[in-house]
Amino acid sequence: MTQAPVSKTVSKTVSTASPAVKRRPKLAELISDDIKRWIAVESLGQGDRLPNEKALMELYGSAKGTVREALKILEVEGLITLKTGPKGGAVINQPGMEPASRMLRNFLHFQQLDGKQVYQLRKLLEVELAASVVGTLTETDLQQMEANMAACACCGGEEDHRHQRFLELEFHQLLAKACPNPLLAFMCQFLNDMLRDLVVIKKAYVPERKQFDYANQDYHRQLVEAYRMEDSLRVRHIMAEHMADAESHMSALEAEMAAQMLISGDLLHTYHHRSKLHDLPSANAAP
Amino acid sequence: MTQAPVSKTVSKTVSTASPAVKRRPKLAELISDDIKRWIAVESLGQGDRLPNEKALMELYGSAKGTVREALKILEVEGLITLKTGPKGGAVINQPGMEPASRMLRNFLHFQQLDGKQVYQLRKLLEVELAASVVGTLTETDLQQMEANMAACACCGGEEDHRHQRFLELEFHQLLAKACPNPLLAFMCQFLNDMLRDLVVIKKAYVPERKQFDYANQDYHRQLVEAYRMEDSLRVRHIMAEHMADAESHMSALEAEMAAQMLISGDLLHTYHHRSKLHDLPSANAAP
DNA sequence: CTGTTGTATTTATTAGTATAAATATAATGA
DNA sequence: TCATTATATTTATACTAATAAATACAACAG
Image (cartoon, rainbow over all chains, first blue to last red; front, side, top):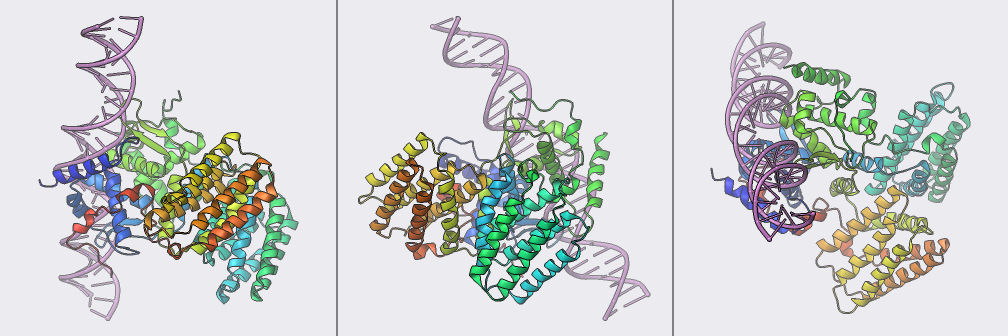
């Protein structure tokens, strides 16, 4: 009815604005960008609701599918969640680290990244992070860390060494969660997640290095001790040693990572599922 | 015809696989995950083609819209690009840093991040990066850096100080591009991009501090000098000083960032466009 | 008051159709 | 022979309509 010219206006405005080089922006992208701008300008947050699909349809003069695609973009970016039913629809969601983490893994999947490079960063960032939480750790935090150490020490016998590594990394995640610098926290958590998934994937990862486990536990013990007396310098020193030690124990298995980066977190449990695409008669063709 | 049971099979398999807590995964997500798995397992890259929409429709026994949504997800994640025409369709694309960068900004938009925290990381990472490219810089790289310095020195007079900052950051981008560690390179480029957009947004950003510009130019000059003689320690020292100096000159405007994080890069030029959503009679409601 | 059932609302998915864009190929002209 | 133009084909893009699924809320029975 009256919405057709509206659609025309939008697409024309932007197609002239982006002068030459790139492709014509798709309608759904324009809409999602517009909504994003709206979120930013109105500074919406957690729980605020977008108009429902029908309203957006007539607002932008687009069809349902187009609006859905726009919303899908925002959903993939973690900015909204879509629910069905009344009180459903698109609600603003302040994204956690997962979307960013997932994208970073997508990026790294096609790069060559080895364990040495991971530890090049970990040696810097974990130390900085460790120092940055001195004085900000609550008693609850410390207790969680101690609980983690207890779990580590308890099942340290003939149990699965992979579980040890899990707990070891969980300790560092606790630290990261307490970090006041969100960027630093993100980077450390990302590195920990990568190492954790590496432990999952490489099932051969059971090199019976008990001494390594014991050393880690000792480092953690010393760290908590230093945290309790809020000795920043000591924390730095211990963590630096801890990371250097971990790097030196880095197995050859960790040397090549970034191969299975795409299959992250949630997808790991279905890793062995056959892809439907395998049944294709002839699909790919590389010139 | 025969594809209806296929669809049923997929949804049933996974709905039982994810036991309790989360919502039923949507069909489009399952498909996109499956394609992702396919990409990883077959280790496809750059230019390999996915089957066209029709083929995917009958392969997964889903409707066009669903397949389109699945492809949309992969497109947002930067893993494929969709083109029309013959030889068009979905082609694998190894994503650059942009998608990850965008998501990270989405995340940070809702956190509180200030300039101090940015420099907490920059002081570590830029130094490490600077040192890591010693010996790997090509003559071309060095010439580009010198060209950048020349541009910096030339327009240094009464010109726009914002342009100075642009060039200054461009110098660091050159370094980042040469870094062999993709993660370190990403993080440094991300920090630079954030600072760059900050310069764009804050139009009031013209504090006539010529001394700062001159100091930066001198640091850069010294860096290139040290790079030419491949003096790793000297590079570290200069960059550390450079960053400390930059932090000390950090303006109050940079203190609060992370407010306009959502409106990144490409969207900045349309920043003042009115959002269509503003015309809404009554949309949002926060309980 | 409590638990169940029904109903309304909203998204999710499907189906079909039509349009526009991009490319390859054939036809045409020089 | 070569370049240019026209045409046809392939493909995504967009729209319309209709059904299915899920949830909140109200009505109802115990």
